[in-house]
Image (cartoon, rainbow, N blue to C red):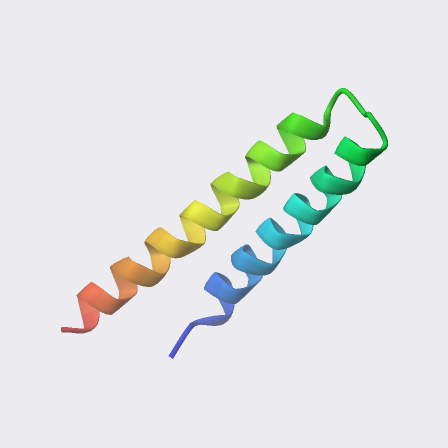
Length: 57
């Protein structure tokens, strides 16, 4: 089962990616930073998920 922490990190990453896309459309200069931070959160959530799956075996 996926823990609440992983779901929270994943959801925050998705939020940042959506916010970055909206800022990109609005031609905001900080859009790339927001997108990059969102991708880092997504990668972190994926790594935590994989780590938890490996620890349970």
